[in-house]
Each structure stands twice: as C-alpha cells, then as structure tokens.
Length: 302
Ligand SMILES: C[S@@+](CC[C@H](N)C(=O)[O-])C[C@H]1O[C@@H](n2cnc3c(N)ncnc32)[C@H](O)[C@@H]1O
Image (cartoon, rainbow, N blue to C red; front, side, top):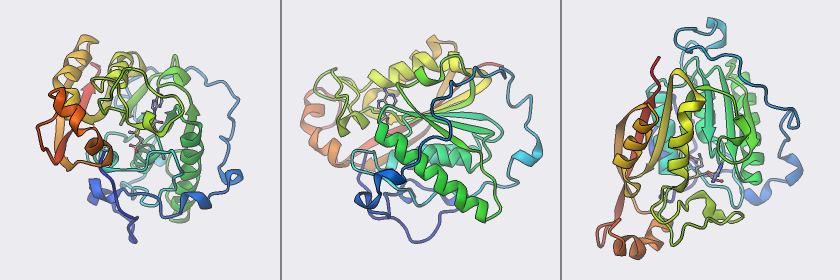
C-alpha cells in the first residue's frame, strides 16, 4: 500500500509491467461528471449460473476469441475520490496475472476490483470472460468506465479483449453458484485498530481488521467452491497478515497453495500512519521503512 506518483506518458507493454507502472489517474477525479460513469449494460439482469464446470485448460476456447499475443495492460486508469488508486500491490497482482499467463482462456473473477486494474490486466491478456465485484458503488462506476475506455482503445488497435462485467456487492455474493478458471484479489489487508470495518469510508479499501485477515480469510474460505477443477486463485496481501496462515487456510479447503512472489515496497501513508500500532502488536519491526507483499497462488485439483 505505497503511494504512487502521476501516470506515465507512455503505454506499458504487458511483458514489461512492474509494480511502479500501474499508476494513478491521469484524468483528475473531480473532472469526471457523474453522468459519464456508465451503467452496466444490463445491471438488473440476474447473473446466470455458469453452465461450464469444465476445466478451462481441458476445454480450450476457440482460437479466435484469444488474442495471439498478450495485449498491453491498461496504463491509463480513471479514478475518483474514495476509490483505491492503483498502487504497488495492484501492480504486483497485475504483473502476476500477465507474467504467469494466468488468465489465458479462462473465465476470471476479480474480487474488490477498485478501478478495475487487475480485471483489465486479465481482459487484455487473453481471458475468456471477466467478472469484477466491489462493495463500493463508486468503484463499480469507475471500473465500468475504465472497462469501456480500455475496450474502445483496444478495439481501435484491432484487438478484442474480453468484456468486463462489473457488479456491486460483497465478495462472492454477486456470483453465487458460479465457478471461474481464475480468481484474483488484492483485498483490504492492513491490520487496523478493531475488527469493525467502516462501510462507507475510504478506509474500507485497506482496513482488514485487527490482524488484517477479515477479508483474506473470507476469500480463502470461498475460493474453492467458486473455482472450476484446475482453476487458480491469485491473491496478494501484506506479509504482516501471515502468508503461512493463508497457505494453511487454503489447504484446509483442499487447495494446493504456495507463495509465488515476495517483494518489498516502501511503506505508504496508510502503513506509516499505522506503524506504531503494528509495532506494538509485533506485526512490524521497529523503525521499518518498508513492508513485504506476498502473492499466493492456490490451485484446485483437476
Ligand atoms: C486494496 S483495494 C484493491 C483495489 C484493486 N483491486 C487494486 O488492486 O487496485 C481493495 C478493494 O476491495 C473493495 N472491498 C472492500 N471490502 C469489500 C467486500 N466486502 N466485497 C467486495 N469488495 C470489497 C474496496 O472497495 C477496494 O476497492
């Protein structure tokens, strides 16, 4: 959860993506008229149960629906006040999705999508379909807008990324009964003063309860029943939450889990503000100037 400077001037190539290359909005948030944030094409429609429970690897999608090569990740993301601006953890997750070709040919679910950065990384790197969910209505509007801009931009380049459908709701609730080939998440994970999470404040983007695990644990508990056989979860969180606890929890649901990436990033403003609390609880070294991020991959057996 570090803070990030202004947006880059040049597009990012998928194979070059780094944590510091997914950045905040070049369009000032207060210049986005509310009426330009698009509604979902069919927001009231019930989400049909996914009829495909087949392994997406065993049942490849038609070649025509998968771009021949990964297309560039979305470098220009609109945001709005109260919506989590893409930061280092966003970049690490997007980098893992693209670098591991994890979305290719799969139906993807991005939990806590924020601006939609990870969802767009999946859409641009060969996903068959992308569904995104966020508890914040404003994030849902912003993600829909980014998805539309991304699609228009790639269509102009004669690339045809998967459509991103964005739903408002609590984690898996909007996709009950559906299964995906890839679930991605950069959930709130910063240890906070209490286990009571604010419902309508920016802090719901990062507060994860006393040990930072309220959302992480719920994702671990819900992932298996929303993955097709052979499906993957890619989850990023701070080291302070305990990667081992995540691995154990996922294993408890029959998933094979491992840490696939560890990176250190400078403390951002939220972590700096919490430093004393984290030190007092033994979650951070005294005087620490950086924090660890871990990417965990969990797979469901075929
Ligand atoms: C750390 S931000 C990550 C945003 C984005 N995925 C990214 O990587 O930039 C966490 C996101 O989770 C959302 N969120 C928090 N609690 C949620 C819940 N119970 N269900 C769905 N989304 C939630 C927040 O609104 C926020 O957009």
